[in-house]
Figure 1 (cartoon, rainbow, N blue to C red):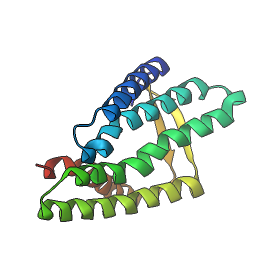
Figure 2: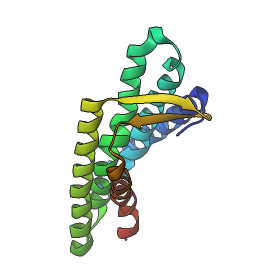
Figure 3: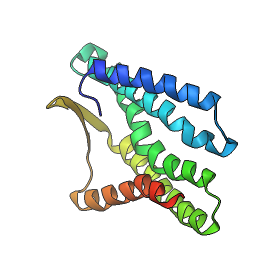
Length: 162
């Protein structure tokens, strides 16, 4: 996401503070899951800051691995399920709730699949053109449909809620 360790830490710190503030002041109880998104995204960015500063030092390989998996925990496991779930909690229309529930299910399948692949096949990271590139060893034929379903699960909820 960010372009340097400094940018990741600055973004992460700001979002974490803003997210903590939002969670202290939700207007409705049903909004707390949605209001947690900035806090969790901030934590994800703090993990990426650690990936930046540990990436090139072999002596920090274990810290890099922990930070990498911390970052990817959110990217691969949390977002495809949490985003539709948090929007579902705020929805009142039965028709939109059914649609959002289906997206929660799709997100859970995506999250579980990505978590399993990450843990069994491993994930590598490399600094490339001022960003961190995370690589999974996935068969080429499932990358495009997987990316499509990931985007459907994480973006579509924002177009469903009223």
